[in-house]
Length: 260
Image (cartoon, rainbow, N blue to C red; front, side, top):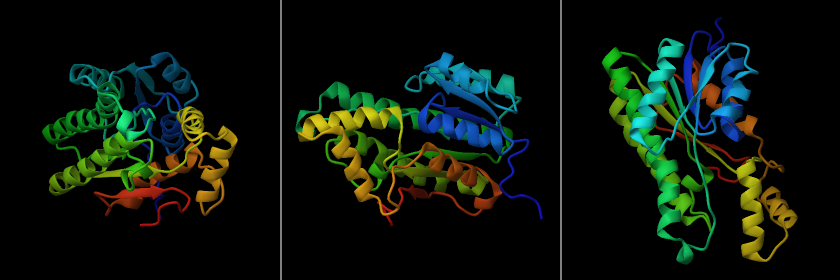
């Protein structure tokens, strides 16, 4: 029986793939046989990740908030890869503040990267695939905060709810064309973003960072902080033929924090 998780011959673009969850996704896709182009604002760090990959690949600079930048980066990726049939729209940001104190600039920053960035990447990819007749696969990075409102992260949570809603709507429109669209919803993942958030949350709640981290573990039935690889392996599943009859899903990868 063929390995239904094998991605040999597949060509992927991963936005925000230079660090954290994105870098783990890049490495997991590479291990599964795919060739990956990393599209990231931090192109130098992205290049260092590419240097580790066994199947080659390359890095392109991108600002996911600007249409012309996404189009240019994807054109460069297509030239280097010879096309692509997998998109992981992963680039994301966060800031933390009580909802009544969120500024217009913070609201726009979260929505521009988290929601608009997914919209642009998805739309530009699918326009190309529809023109070519490619039956591609999209995996967007949402969040546990796309399923339940997160205190001190109302703007971030709203932007991730937008990602989930967009994913479901796009999936319904593209299913007749054979293009699948899903998203992953990670929980408390050990990344540099989480480390910043733990410090912010500790300051806002009058706690120590260690107490915040311990609270995350207590909230997680499987009893540990999530690793980026926990997310990346599910992305490989969603990219593969193992998930061939799945679309429009928001897959919880939370260690049991969210079970519906």
